[in-house]
Length: 149
Image (cartoon, rainbow, N blue to C red; front, side, top):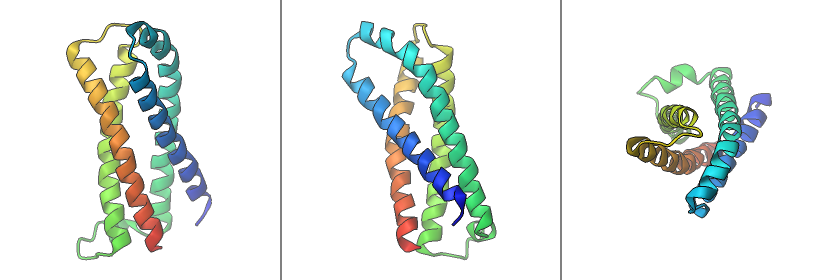
């Protein structure tokens, strides 16, 4: 494997670690005044950091798939192997997580330092929880792929 795996792993650690940090922060900050003091300052920094991590993950993941000749195999439904099936599942989950992240980021940046509507709050919290949970499912698939190689 080339340099892509190293960047991919660093970006994955950053992405998942950041997600865990923000989840813990969100659970621990119950007071509205504390949230108003912290989120407007940390949110944008974290948002840009997570966007950069996600972009690196998508680019390096795509490069690894291309460089390892997996494009045609991934789209051939007659080919099945533990690693290939896990990669297919991982890619579907990554696509879902990317869409959820885009929705969450739009709401977060648009409502920074502003009061959210009830719907925005529900979507924002739900997407945060979805990203948090999907991270560990994607990580599981990455471990399955690595174990079979």
